[in-house]
Length: 496
Image 1: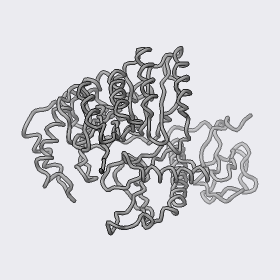
Image 2: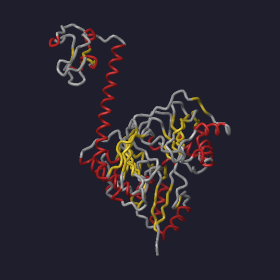
Image 3: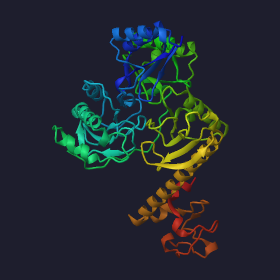
Image 4: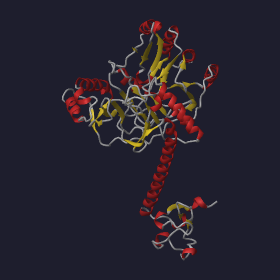
């Protein structure tokens, strides 16, 4: 007799789960002979349950008051940057209490993806949802960006939204979009102003005029694994290479949390688990448990900055293979994030995307799979403007081109940094007078200095001639770089 598995998803709104609820979930899963739990890119949990244990597992969850879905995907989780508060030092007015107030205001299960993120952090994606709230510089007010379902069409709302109105506005936006799919759902072109006008004519919301456009912060993925200090406490990040957390390990984690009065745990879009507020005197409990289950921490950074579709073994295998290519070439990937898409319109977050081409025939063999590599224009993963870098590649060629793209990224960043430094020093020259005795001018290529105290005998420039008085045809005596490229520098930096 053919048997199937139940795929059971438990949403954790905001990526938050109480230790008590998680313990109840783990107990139910153990009774159903489940091996482990997988975390999702929208901070949810997935359980694969054998057919004969499925009904019992669902009944246990119901009795524990746990909301779930079995073998369907109607309610994508609300994700938030709640997990980042305190541990990644965000400088904004958003607090844990405010996140809780907003999340508690959702008295319905959204059928569209909702993101609630702090505007300075880069750990949680901004626009991977359909209804995306990003904190502004004005206390208790948020930018709103609509990414229409199954598109990359991003519409900036014309007003800032007040915190307490977020749940009510989300419900109304969802109703209008889902009731007018011919206008707003999976369409090649969409007029967001129609949605805005429809909302404005229905209900009143507390809003403020936008005086400053949203600026995307430069992407830097914080290292989210292992023990880390903050204030006088510790937080622990746990990542699993195979994306599977053993249930017995999670049971012990819950028990430690309950024993040490840590009421909450947090999941992340990087499929990791974070425990905050660990007292230093309790670290031995955590060290013992990590050792007991041989849980490794401190993986390489180039393994932690990947997004793979949920429950996708194909994508996970490809990720592991590509990470090995990076390791073999000692490839630096800091400042980048990667996404592997094996299915269309999955909305993953990444500055570099490896996208499997859709098969022309349903029976096309895996050996014939081809991939495209894309990247965002500025390599910020929160951007939705993609550039095709290479197309129609075999799997064996992906590593070579991805490594080449990483090198290009760093060359581009170096050039941008050089231009920025040059503009900064030129602004300084045009501004206040530079004290003569404190400044020299340096060639950016070979580091040769021009000091007016000595001049440049090789170019017939006498001592005492200011650099700005030197002829415009002046070149570096060592490498020939023109005068206009020299950078001002404090002389004291070169005195030892």
